[in-house]
Length: 354
Image (tube, helix red, strand yellow):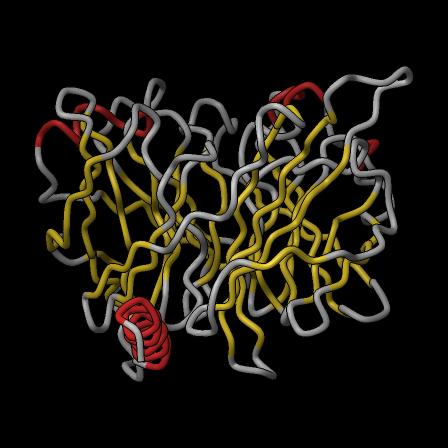
């Protein structure tokens, strides 16, 4: 075996070991990352969630990454891995296993030659297929051929990397939508063996099935577009998981209300949505603009603030009981002072795992 083939085989073995070291603990933690604007380093911490009292334990430093000025974005936790990535073609893509404390830098996907096309946008998505038990990275690039044509043509190129199974490969699939109209409008969510993202202008959610690697559309719930103010529609991530189901968040900012509407996809295959609402104790803006980021194993929804300006508090989270409709605010203590004083502006990740 050549040295190059030996290294490739070792890398695939490392990826398979990284992916199969799944957590079997009932403990739940928060992964929090913050970007230090002085050092351009991104610091990662683990914070235990104490279910009995709905409180937080002391933060534990995990690791530090040299980063670019925007910091790296984290995917949702897909047992046993997180995926970290940036917005640009040259930004690194990494996986992290909290159980083994292993961080692995993945190979870059082949770049689009600058002489043949202009790359207008790049999105990186992380998914897990429960049937094949495989983790996959999907890289979507919106490109325009050079020279430009009239009318202009924008194409969507998709590359897939299966962790532990070799190199990047281009997939040629028929798109059931206009790739310009259905451009990515935020971070994606993987659930039910598919990667989902909310579009900028369309009336559907895009779903990419990880097993057969085809795209499909899920219609938005009735009345969603009428209750959503387009100019600020994507101010925060709209797709979350609630009780193992896909959920979609609505707008409250433009009305100044204390209510946030949420649609839960109760019947995934028949596209049946159920509308719920979160009633805040005061106006959404005045209580720090808290938005849901998911649920914990005991059923409570976890919310993070977008702003601390009105609350004049250090970093905190909310637990929300959907049945009793009660809130509990919990301060995040024990973090370095530069994080506490910096607030949401420098916090890049708050995600649940375990």
